[in-house]
Length: 123
Image 1 (tube, rainbow, N blue to C red):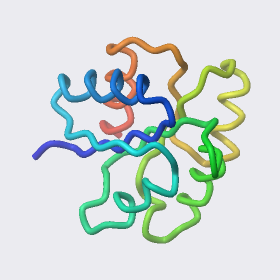
Image 2 (cartoon, rainbow, N blue to C red):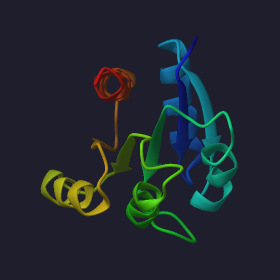
Image 3 (cartoon, rainbow, N blue to C red):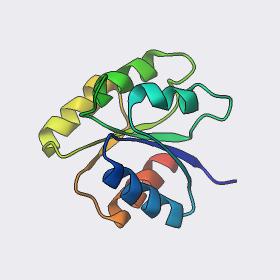
Image 4 (tube, rainbow, N blue to C red):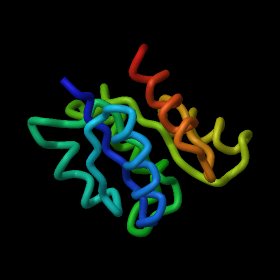
C-alpha cells in the first residue's frame, strides 16, 4: 500500500514539482493550498502518513499550523516536514519550535524532496 503524502503550499508551481517528484517515487500525493483546506485530509479517516508544509502561507503560517497539529490528539503522530527558502539556522529553530520532524529548503530537486520523505518515513 502506498504511503500518503499531503503537501501544503500556496504556490501551484511548488505543489506541482513536489507532487511530480513524489508520484514518481511511488507515493500517493494529495495537495492543499493552505492549512485550512488541508484539514479535510488531516482529519479524515484516511489521514496522510506525512505532511510537507510551507512556512509562509496566507491565513495561517505553516510553523504555527504544524505546532497546532502536534498539539492535537488526532494529528500529533503525523510526521511534518517544513518547507521554506529561509536559511538553515532559522529552519532548524522553526522545526524545534513547531515540534516538526525536519525541513526541506527551497528550491529543492526531486531527489532532495524524495530523500527527505524517505528518511522521515523510515523512522
